[in-house]
Image (tube, rainbow, N blue to C red):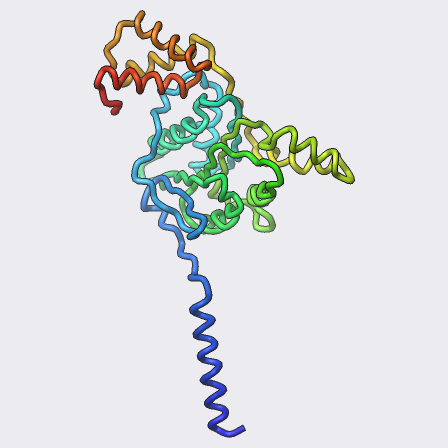
Length: 292
């Protein structure tokens, strides 16, 4: 081969290499978890967006969930201290403060950490991005911070198979789940899958028992199941009283009770969400901002 031919071949190879470099995806950058205490996972960019102000209420304002509050707080504090802790599934009645409790416990845990300790991080992943959960955990594995990866209103329908990504991430595969990561999820379903989906699997599978077992076993990846049930009238009124006292809303007790019960009746439910919606309405009528 002549020198000219050799030079041409080398030039062609260099141009091919340069073109491949341009086509290759950019290298993943390690997340800067020191930028904030809470983040939202952006799956399309494989990046974490910091949250300047988390939408949450004080832990003391969450009423009627004392047992699950204490259990979640204990698990979260152990995790923040570097001790073994479980993934948690908060399931049950709508509007009873499942996601509010996760955010409140996160803030409360950070307030009680000793001086100089690294703060606990809260990272929200959207339901539709669950398939990218293994990538997120991979990014967090080498970081010195401990992080709660949180998915609100998690469930799976129809032919959705992304639950398999969740199972793999919770088990951790060959590497195991990162020691600095736990997964918290809220759902209206205890097993995350609708009954008709599980029954359809049973009717069409060669081995019905194994097909259903695979889907039910998803919830088994959560070491803690915390159930939320509809609140009583007394618990509902206690939530109202707590908000009124916290925000300094001036209203006669008897009028407050009558309005709060009527509000719940017109909506057909008593829950923490219903109580908060009434408080927003009351504060608006009193021209009072809900701060503090």
